[in-house]
Amino acid sequence: MGTILRSSAKCLLAFSLLITAPYLILSNEGHALGVISPGDNETYDDDWKEFSSSEGGFSVFFPQKPTESFGTVNVGKMIVKTHTYFVRDSNTYAVSYFDVPHTSNDPKVRADLLIGLRNFVLAELKGTLVSESPLWLDKNEARLLEVSIPKRGIARAIIIVADTRLYRVTVVPEKPLKNDSDQLPTSVSDRYLKSFKLSPIDRSAEGEVDAYLRNNPELAERTFAADSIPSVDGRALKLPIPEYPAQVRMARISGTVIVKVIIDEIGNVIAAQAIGGYPGLQASAVKAARQARFTPTLDQGQPIKVLGKVTYNFVWR
Image (cartoon, rainbow, N blue to C red; front, side):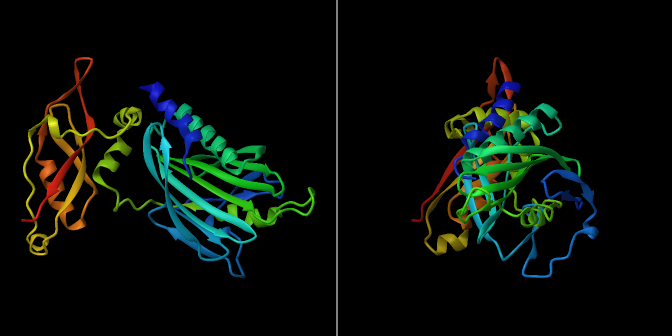
């Protein structure tokens, strides 16, 4: 399993895009000098305003209200959802994050993830690494990158591994340079990068299966190795029919709901989460899925937990 786990970090190259913590202090040369407490940060006397995301688990100062976008990345063979907040003017300021289940207390895994994320940033920006400095945000390992982009100058980025969440904070010059000696003023990038701080993540909207995978990296490793979430309908020993909600039936609404499930070693469902279908039908489908039972899965003769999906068809008649 260790091989699969390390490969998930290396697959950052295949991305298909992308408790209050202390601030970073960055010198004009871009090197980390240390940290200061949040109360010591500089004041922002113009249009820059603090933006925070409880779900993202961070805050940062942007020169204007950021645009939110969503995407996906391929980690191993599994699709992972990404969040990005960005502002584009003469520079592009962006914070992106996503969750990658892994053994977060393994230094080798964290190092592999940082390497993969660094290489992805270089590939995405089509730039050359100028410098890389180690940083720590609270107790989270990070790197400060300076990247030379042809005809645009120096971009700067902080990449962070914070438990199972990866962050990428970037400031990239957008206007073409008049000559090669022009560069993005470090005071601009310093102001942005050192305003970034981590905060407790609000995971109240996180699905039950996603939470289980995040907290059980061994199962997540096997999930990464799969081409897709397999259907387990045909392996059901017991598959209760979900109740058709009265209000939905009265509205003559039909639909299909897909529920992904975690099945334990004896075939019981220990986590269920709807991943598609009409919202008014999802709760009923999830309730039925939790009562299902399946043939146990064996790996070299030993029963194991697995991820699968069940499809429910609601047909109004």
